[in-house]
Image 1: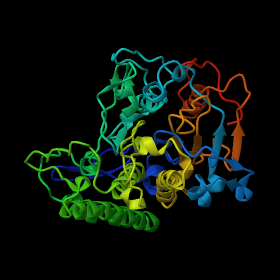
Image 2: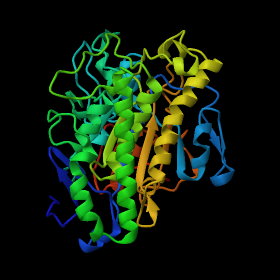
Image 3: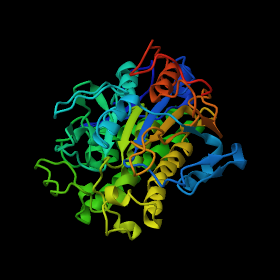
Image 4: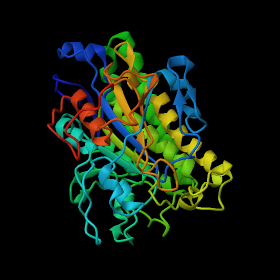
Length: 426
């Protein structure tokens, strides 16, 4: 039965399934709201990048990109590279945990194995806007949390960038199948019936009520849901970790090292799920941690299987550059997915901000300047296609950037973390 709510959007419903429909002009105009929503995503990879290849010069289509950022070539006019930001509190502890646990909050961290950070920007936005969505915030990961202690700081700081409160790291969803079900299923324990199978009758009844363009958009959306569901099914048939699906029996235990068997497919599935969440307005806030700081991931898909990510980061080798480009390729892939979803003469990417960051600039623990790139125009509120150089500025805190971003989500705070001023020039 189709939801009777007329104020914001429509839902398709079936046995154990609720699917939010994508933004559609005909529905929004009927509800008196023609502006698509703004979304926010954070992508993170630990241990920094090649010390000589994270750079951009010039503007717009003439912008030149360093080799790490070259995967973003199609989006040169849609990105903003921010140089010179840092977190002062991250320089006070050890060289890994304390450089990651407050990356999105700027808060001081408790040591001695105690857990205390600060509420992160993604969760502040989710707390302000998440009530209007089925999933207030989607927090995904591709590497399991590390519960140990390193140099007197909990390694949970290295494993979590999203914090729901100062003492609560937001739980990571590592299984793409469970993340998928969270978007669409009302109860993950209701069996393994396909999402589209459950809502097909409702979709058929609803389609004739749409304008031609929106009917086409509905078909494209249903096709994209089916494609992700099919890929999860196929991964499950191969016996891979990311293919495990919830049913009446407990999930198979995660391998002891917590590393997916096919990291490339795992990351792509997670990007697809973020795109589906934004496309359907099931969520407007997503955080995807591609790996931990002090990461143990290996990359056999790249022919780099002889050394874990953390140790590889201590060199500026060709293999390290290859891994860097692989990570930036995930950002480019997600940006492409969002750009392909059209709404109100724009794309979802036009109405989003994707923040990509790491815990340090280089693998040698340089954290007094952080790698920061934004992709997406956030409804025309971010001037892209350029480099914003903050080196030498008195106000070059990451939290200056966060205050400016939150302003664009109509969240007006007098201060956040260690900052009281906005970042100028955004």
